[in-house]
Length: 119
Image (cartoon, rainbow, N blue to C red; front, side, top):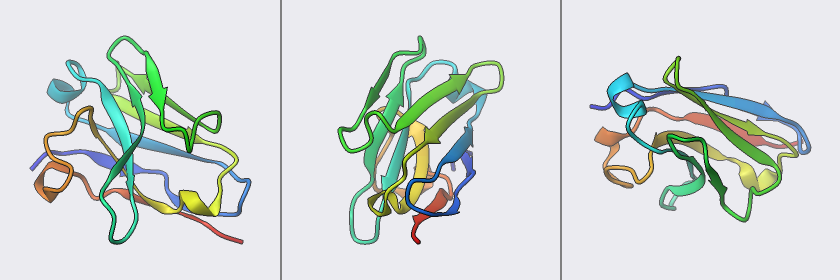
């Protein structure tokens, strides 16, 4: 099982901010683009942000201008700064390579971190 460890989620009011972190094994991190994904009950995981090994970034339209992905290659860690959060951002957030080995096989995913946006 891949050792991806996400953290930083929590309960936040609409308009608030959170910063997620994901520690990945070096052998995975160094050679791959990384992505943050999210999943709500009954739906497939969706990619919300990606960052290449060189630092180029792309975002889903739903989070563009509000979320920022970054990576620290020395720490094998990828971050997701989430600002201006909306109730629609409520989900379990995961990190993985981009593309991931599988969107649905849980053996390739960490536990994720729950983000709840609610007043």
